[in-house]
Image (cartoon, rainbow, N blue to C red; front, side, top):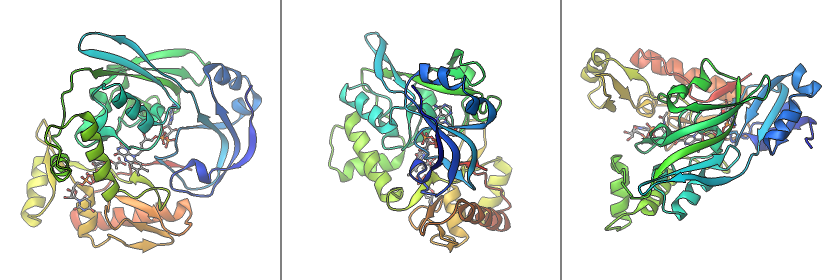
Length: 340
Ligand code: FAD
Ligand code: EPU
């Protein structure tokens, strides 16, 4: 049985800790619950928003519609060979708990993605990535229900059209499917990815001689804790902007004016620029405006320092975009999903 609640405070359902209300709120614990929901008047008469952990959302105002919190649980092994194992996790599983489950079984592939907040169901939305790995590298397939008729569809990796912080679910299929489960192909024989320099530095500091996947996970956790604010302390949604991609011409022009520019070459010739560096160069680290601020340890992260409103964070993000444009002629794109 589903219970649709009226006028619910979403403060604890978004990691920015923004106090906003939705007209209706429902938690679903099974696909049967969702099929029941789509028969209801409230569902059919209102705009809908599916949420997991609310860690990549910014509510600018109250949500005039129905919020659907996905609580589908369950993790199991689908198939295995001598080298690989396919693990399926339901959408409502907490991402980091799922990573720990895989570590406990000694299944390799997700350790670099340790401690990313949120739920499994949202992980394909923006092809979550950190410390040299994106989920598309270990993604097998996902299952999703149509929001129109509840019909279950499988999506292969190709069908998801993954890119940097992108997927088809943020573009052509936006708001069309409720993701119910995601499968990953993991390795039984560990192949570590320590290409992200900070991991090796941290492993050395930890005095680990022959690292395994748990050591890499612990190194990533340590690095993340030093840079990224804990939403329990300061509300935030991680990186607020994407790192911009520029042509080699633009990169060279910027590099000659700003020799310290932080940039990474991409396959194909373009460059990715560290947006945190661009924002820091504008003197905005620690800058506060209306109860929102640019984080002092990572300028790419905007934080709620004093019970601010979503509109305050949004206004700050607009200010940051303007300042970066004035200084570098680049328009930063917001990475966080803006609601309202
Ligand atoms: P939500 O915020 O609840 O939803 C995000 C989007 O997905 C919304 O559009 C929502 O409608 C949609 N959605 C959610 N669940 C479903 C579903 N089951 N079916 C269909 N649509 C759905 N991200 C990274 O990629 N790398 C990082 O290193 C990283 N670090 C972070 C650090 C911090 C401190 C924080 C707060 C966030 C960070 N993030 C990072 C962003 C965030 O954790 C991820 O985007 C995460 O996948 C969001 O999961 P969620 O369940 O909270 O999604
Ligand atoms: N930098 C600065 N000043 C800053 C921040 C960064 O100069 O305030 C420079 C430094 O040179 C630093 C470099 O930028 O070495 C890169 O910084 P960092 O390693 O922190 O990574 P990022 O590019 O800022 C991206 C992701 C993060 C992910 C990390 C680690 C995006 C938008 N963000 O951040 O993802 O955790 O790499 O892989 O791609 C998220 O999406 O929410 C998120 C936190």
